[in-house]
Length: 462
Image (cartoon, rainbow, N blue to C red; front, top):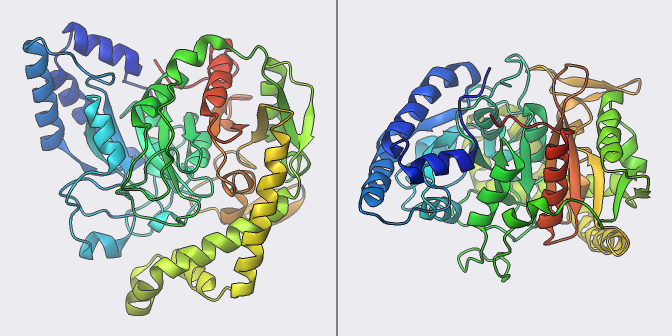
């Protein structure tokens, strides 16, 4: 499935120069979405009227000689757990879609993107209530991987990954609690950014696990990823965990390369439990960066287990009333996981939180001697839709929880990660996590940009 969209910078150049009218561009984008979406099932709402009205307004301002924003005319779409004025925020569920009142205003990140003259064209399919790693949805059907339609996109931001990989939009927004940006980015062969916990506002998004949830961008190139991220930065008093840091632009830093950066490859937990090609992908990145140092993140397996306990307990607490009233309206898999979370002993949650503090201290110590850590993103390539188990190193394990084996130990303590796509032996894409210390998204994006320019990782930008 070939791309039809230009890079963000090219779109902006065409809009600003007047080579193409914004209205004509967005009309073509909407037509392409309607042609492609039936195959990949990425969009749940297509916003023709709104998008064309915004595009016409940009054209009027251009004609009047007004300066356009940094993302002028760039179409984007958002995971349907993010508020869009006038729409019910589905969060991938039947319950929200039928009973939740339409949002009264847009989420903060939607408003920031549109303040830069980006144009919202729709909302995207996702795993129910974000409790998903596969991109499958019992109510709206699975998102389908544009590289192989019978394979998963990964989740829970499956529509966000599919829409970008299929060339329907150059950028999308997803959420990441335990890996929900990084896994779709990996399976769909594109770039994803899970920012530091608290870096980007979550105001106007339906929560899953408040102590872990972040929102972030998915894109076809590192340049596009950084441009989108920069526009969305800034504190937000309406989000209680929003950081109070100044905007720290990253786009202008991408050409600094990797000279002087201390980079290591994660081993131990991150060098086991995966298909051989996964470690080959990490090795290819390490070779491109001339990385020889290896480092072990202590107790990463226990961190994954603790993240599962906290996710289950916090997620269940949010849904208790709905579970009591209408359990049958949930996806049975999601319902059963939430019910199990509700039965989690309080002592387990307390122990998991205590361990979390210790683990964060240990990992932050590592960043005194390294700037960047490389690790695999998933234990395998995109499985087939409906697949239930995974064979890893001679052992058959349940597929769904296994997909987060490498992402959960990182998001558990809120670290920023850029995921880059690696293509090996003509098969489906793999992904590598570029992990940095809190608030150092700039370093992860610099490394990703270096790898993209070196041809080590290839996005889908035309």
